[in-house]
Length: 131
Image: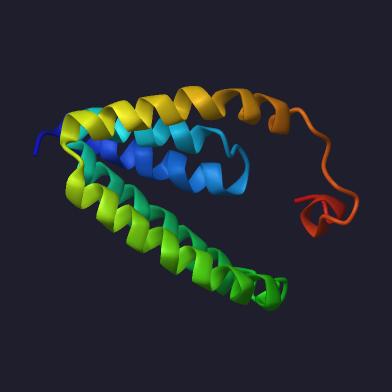
């Protein structure tokens, strides 16, 4: 692997972690960038591992503030989503997956612009404590 590839992957990893803490919309950009560096299927696998690792670190660090009831309610939709994703990825080609990623970015961009301009909720504990 070249130094440019390693640097690009490290930057995407950093931006993915950063997007989980502050700028959520950058996650779509990361997925699109990763799909240009790696084959589309492999890039989605790498992105999934990065996102799951970030979630596990966040749960470990903020375990006092985790809403376990909400997480338990998300388990089945997550499992179903993983199986649907595995089925889709087993059928998709790299070109069709790149097109799907591009279409998803274009369709979700307007909703990201709208959500990023909204004010923080008053019950958001991070907002209250100034983090």
